[in-house]
Length: 423
Image 1 (spheres, helix red, strand yellow):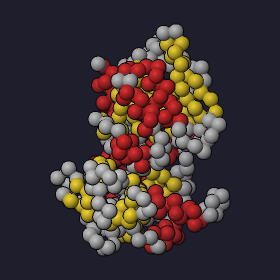
Image 2 (cartoon, rainbow, N blue to C red):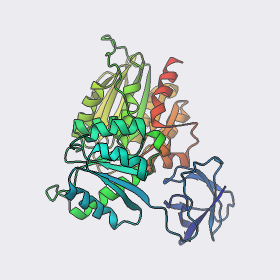
Image 3 (cartoon, one colour):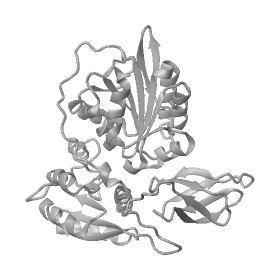
Image 4 (cartoon, helix red, strand yellow):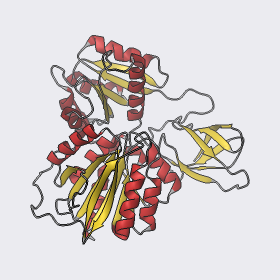
């Protein structure tokens, strides 16, 4: 299938192209002396595409012939298909305010409003939204109960917009566990950010959520959290995971499902403030069958344990006799991203072919060099399938530059790791 893309040739060989499947903008560099097509994945829709070196237009060919019927292709300069939004909030005033935020955006269209979860469940089958915004506290049926029913009956991407869903809050993690794709507090003049910035954030988050493949959304039922053996053994393998935007949701689909008998240790870099990472580690520990801890400098690394660290810190590994220890230090450049690369390179150097790495949902370009080194040492690399990511930028960047065999939806990554640990 050929997908024609609008293109703008910039100075030299820098080309700006727009995917007409999903409207995503991509900035690529083509070698005008080399006619070999370049393979890449669209960060908007996640399709594997081939860009032909043609300065007039860039033609994309997708190897996947059985595309879902739901994918819409827009040709020429026709407007892109707008994403349909259902607003659910018991306050008429809030519903009107959220509607006004979306009315000025040409990518989002409000197709319905509901004052409680019961009304929302009825409306979903009628208006078939691409994304649902949900309040938490509502009469008749609250937001979390609505999420559970929605994910079982008619899964749709959901973004929590509530005064309760703040980063680091337990109720926020509950919402993500029950199937929400993302969260954001309601706009407030006391938040410290201008209302314009808050509105832009809401539009961005809802637009990103609408692109998440519905099959990737699931209600994560609680697992039996019988804690692991008290006599933890040193790790025989190390697996590094890196995530930023959308990482909370991805990790909630992975860490709680890891086997309690696993001998692998997991080191996670999550780009969030340390206080939020600490809160998330406590929440994960309560809902997982393996131990989940905040990474501390000098800790002995034990098998069947997950160590979380903020992207604002450097996390590396050092050999200590027949075991391994964590090295945690402040990041002297907190505004620069590179801590995932640093962790993965350290794991690759220390464990060689017993190392592993996974790049999850996130913005930015960290992780490529670290995962490359893990693969070079004979370790295992995994990339979360872009269609299941809230933010596809980091996984797509890696897939554009590395040959990866394991491109896996987040809901299946734990099974893959559990299987690897047995062998």
